[in-house]
Length: 127
Image (cartoon, rainbow, N blue to C red; front, side, top):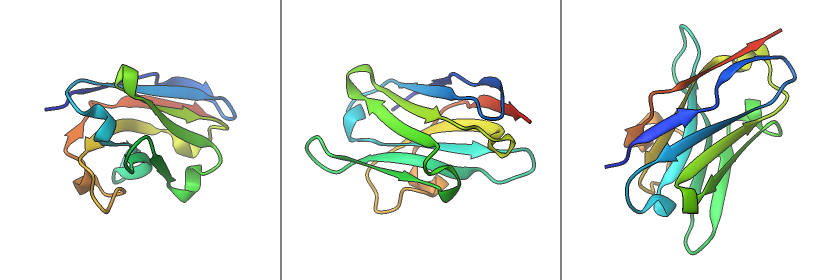
C-alpha cells in the first residue's frame, strides 16, 4: 500500500513558477513509476508527466506536449518524494494536480496505469 500527499499548489500569475511535491509512504518507492496528472473544471483528468525506473539507477521522464520545456518531473528516492517544477505557467495550466504511483507497465500516460493516487493540490494561474 502506498499513500501519497501532494503540496505546493497555489495562486500565481502567468509567467510565474511553482514546485509541487508528492510525499509517498510505503516500500520500494524507487521502483514505482511516479506521475502527475491534472484535472481542470469540466474536463477529464489528463496526463502531465511521469518518471519511470528503467533498472539500476536509470530513470526516464515523459511529458505531455503542452508542458514540454516548461515543466520538469524529478524524484528523490531517499526522501520518497517526487516533484513537478512548473515554469512559465499559463492560465490553461489551472487545474487540480494529482500525484500517482504505479508498478512498472509498458504504458505510463493513462489513469489505469496507476494504482495509488493523492488527494490533489489546486494550481490557479491568473492572466
